[in-house]
Every structure is written in C-alpha cells, then in structure tokens.
Image 1: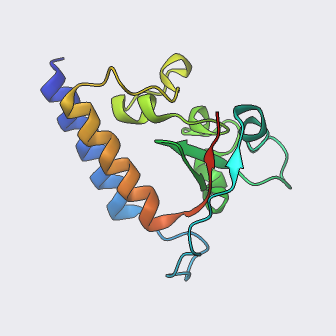
Image 2: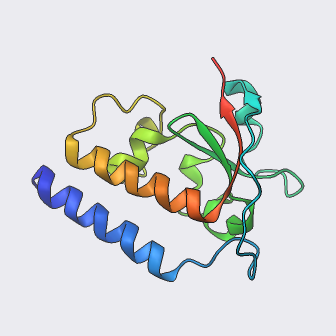
Image 3: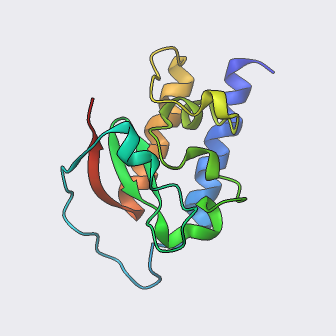
Length: 136
C-alpha cells in the first residue's frame, strides 16, 4: 500500500471516529481549561487504565489528554490501549496499533502521516481535557 493510500485510509478513520464519537462524559460540551502539569515518562506510565480507579492518559505531541471517559476504547484489552500511559504520537500518525510505533518521536513521519497526526491532535483537543505535558 502506498503512503498516499495509507494516509488516505488513516484520514478516513479519523473522520469516521470524529463522526461517531461523543464528547467525553456524555452531555459535557465544555472542556476544562488546559493544565500544564509536568509528567515524567514514568509518572505518565502509571495512567494506563489497568487500575479502574486511575485515570487513563494519552500523550500527543507532548500534551497529555485524559481519555478516561472512553475507557471502553482505551482500557486494557481495548483497541486503542496501545496508546495509553505514554506519548504515542508516531503510532497515531501512522495509524498503527503496533506497540513499537506507539512512541513520542514523530520526526520520521511522512508529510501525509504528519497531517493524520495533526488531525488526531485536533480530535483530542475537541473531546478530552488537557491535564499536563510530558516532561523530560
């Protein structure tokens, strides 16, 4: 499959997800103001959804989003669980569910994959609270 076809397919996935996904917490239409709380990679890893009492966080381009409202998509055993507890920018840009792709470094993405990553970032910004940032 060519890069253009992959990017086109991934773009369709984002648009489909955008069309069918509801805002977090049902009727909630307004998000909280973004927070800038720093999380180390080790701290972020604790928010992987394995404990029902712990929120689920996903990092994109250094920002951390609380996706707990969609535990059915991001929880253990669910389709997008590979992205939780880390900054998974590359995997989102590549529309890849491979654990080796779910890493922060997205510098090797093609222009088409970068557009897909940007679309995912916009999708998350509209639906999930930003609760912090990844600290080095």
